[in-house]
Length: 452
Image (cartoon, rainbow, N blue to C red; front, top):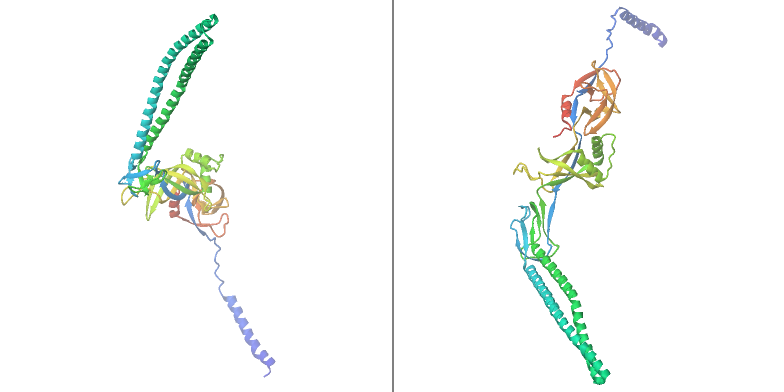
């Protein structure tokens, strides 16, 4: 059979029957079910806005060190004849303890020599006084002799004019008169030197007195005494050793107080200062100004030592600002003082705050009340809220203070408002929300930043 005839007699009738069956089914079948169009809610997590008091805080880290250190430096040289039995590394010695004693023999001899010199000078001064008296009396006698020689010379001149004596007799009288005048001049010169001699001896006595005081002072310096209670850090001498003047015998760390130079981000510290001052104030970043600012602001400080799951705390106070900025980390050193470094020590439970401990320092300002929200909830100056009908609403807010993971905001947000913490994929104002309150996040927010 030919192909064209096959299509005409077989294929076309079968196709026609299929089309007819399809038309019959469509005409007599039931219409499809219609699903009504509904709005889909977007799941989000929210927290309820509450007025919370949070303390602005800056955290830094640093190493503890004693607030003052005593270096036992010898002021005089000599052989060590005694060392305190407790002068050993790690031992604690009370104030006024004698650390070591240098042999006083040389300085005792110096005192004896100075006393002998003073007595000799005083004796010479007495001798000068006696000599002055004797010379004054001798001068009076010689003055009378001079008067006699003058009378003899006058008689000789009269007799020469009368031709009674020769010229030789007159010359003898004149020679005797001149000799007496010369003797008078010698005595007067000697008396004139007495005040100078007395002044020289007086000054000499002052020199010897000074030498005596120096010797006594050096004798007192043979004992090195601890001015305050301290812990021995190092010892470098032994009994019988010769200690040179200026040599360090031991180093001791005071236990009355400790210091921590906490490295704090300078931007965070500046923010804390500016917030504590107020927005109208400016804060210079030089160390002298910032130290005065910190002391006047009344900031509180606390030192934390973390030992596994335990945190040991010491109250502290801000003392001063370091003079340099760390070039590696860009942080500024804030030095806090702990006056209870060695108080309330419990062996095995609470150690003292000793040198070299790596600790955390928290600087805190006065608590500020307001609406605090998670920092990530504020995006481009907007805060997303869920209204009473679970619809999305956006409001403009201003961030007043940011610390750690929270931010203090101002704007049209009242306590009780529901703030979106999770960010929807597409943000459309008025969109329907499936709201779930995050209680764990609310509890964290309630405690974050408070004084510990």
